[in-house]
Length: 146
Image (cartoon, rainbow, N blue to C red):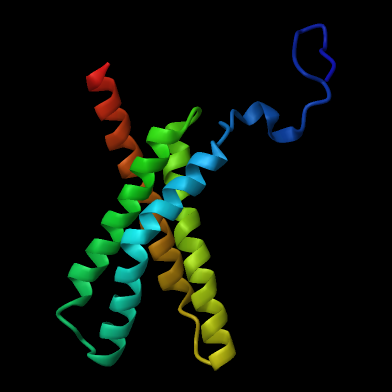
């Protein structure tokens, strides 16, 4: 990339100046995979219990367990990240959720049932926030330990 007289990059892509931080992809994948061991079985159990016993008293505790698993994704990814630990943690949880949800969407489309897009979007926002929460907690712990 060349530089203009002012020192700015002249061949940089348009998003270059937006200040978008890099994501540590291996750390994000690691966080998503390890936390999936916790939250994926809870999500499957939740889907089975809530579908068969509507409304179920188990829906909220199981959903909170899923969210805690997504917090763990953010924690794990943030601790493993070399750069941008907060963004890496948040995207770790979101990415893990979206992969699993994509499988659910395909299953619903093949079965001919409705896809609850608004619920998927809301839960994706919760997944991102949960991952970010885990990343913030990990970074605060790191800062306290020095």
